[in-house]
Length: 338
Image (cartoon, rainbow, N blue to C red; front, top):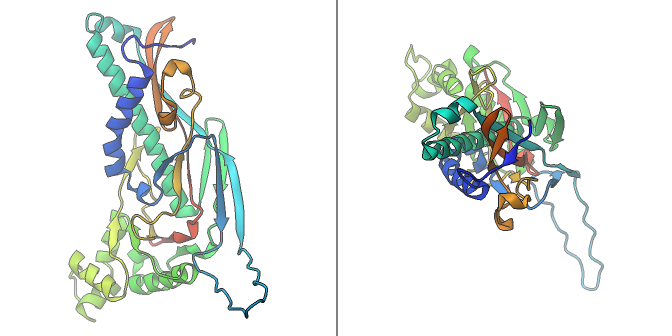
């Protein structure tokens, strides 16, 4: 297969600009883990991160006049470096499809634009899956299409927990949350600002006997806890309210798959407080003069249209270099509750 970049229906620069703008709204509204690992474009193919340590500040010491300054050490800090992995996907407009649209060049152009947007969304979906893995496990592990990569950002073992009794089996929800808050606070000097849960976990909490007793007293009967009552209960213990995350992607078999493990919850800082970044690097395509992409716009997803002569076909390809990195991974805590 010998593909040649073509601008017969749309140039790579125009296609890339269109795709980035069209995909932006869905990325912001659906893939919300970027709140904690926001997108950052870098004019590079490598990543560098300093991991380890915690969120607590050391205490400086006073000294007498004319005395030498005390020396301060670094606590458990490790430098992590590597290459941003490439990701790409292409889609074919077949010989037959081209023939059907032979008198409608605008229809071919629209098909290319539509394919470009969907391919870019697929790349952004993979970025969200990687973010979810990083937030839940403290590392990103990739083993697909010949690529093997593990970027471990050194989260403390105590920040991966399991409820002594799972919540859908009668576990004590509030006691667990307070215990995990103490672990989180001991590392970071304060409790979480966000608790992400699945719809299934929230349903288990609403039906949990210990929660019902905390809201209604020792004889709640079969009454379910309302969301307002649950939020009031959490607030009374100095805990943030639950936020439901239920974004899904389509797996290779076409089935819906949760981005976050629905059996676990996540302690995170307040929305807007960065745990790290999602780095988008510089692809080889973006540096190709035929793509015509300005150097200031080069990092990120790039999309081009390609022609094939035998058999005749038109391809749309989206490419990127990306990896979420989290120097502050101890700002996350994951707990199995179902």
